[in-house]
Length: 73
Image (cartoon, rainbow, N blue to C red; front, side, top):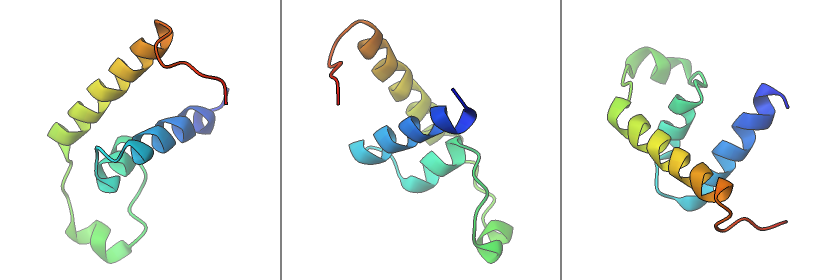
């Protein structure tokens, strides 16, 4: 398993659920802002939303580990 191998399922699941803004998901994955002007102007860390995202993902993994909603694709 590679780092990207862990990041990709997290990003996909979080984006598909639509519960969190894409900026929050990108920040949680520590992606650099692609737009240099926006990166220079926007210093928001989105800490509270990132905490909620991390908690949501931890709960989702716990449900999968317990066998709930685990399906083969």
